[in-house]
Length: 161
Image (cartoon, rainbow, N blue to C red; front, side, top):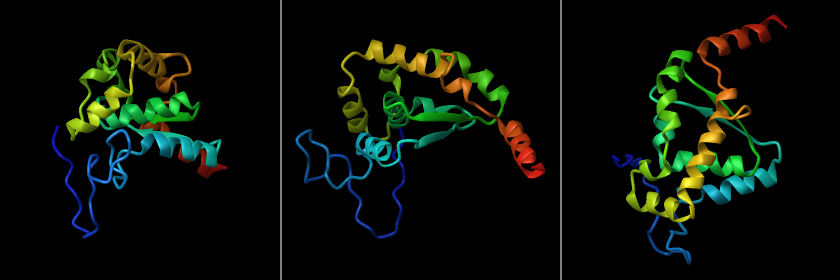
């Protein structure tokens, strides 16, 4: 993938393998490689914490290694997640590709990040099956989606109260 541009704020920037590193080779100073810890922390700090997943028009979120790893980790912790999509037509257009998702095929701007994520997954086939269930099962992510029209209707309902 393409590297994400770094901001020019002047603050030091640390990559996932910049020293000093932890026992697993991951940078202590990097903010991007701490999602496991952050999700666990949020869950302990606020047990009813939930995620709102704003899906882009092309569903690229589901092809990004970090994004899928975060959704999966939150699911494993029992966090509520709700998905928002641009439209029902967008969802329908990408449903078949969602059914074919494989963690091995996901992208990352930094190859080392993808390698780190994949190294944490012992059984990739089982992960892929669980990912499909997480998305498609009766209480899965697709059961929570709302499109822009639904959101406008909800806002209207609230305004009438």
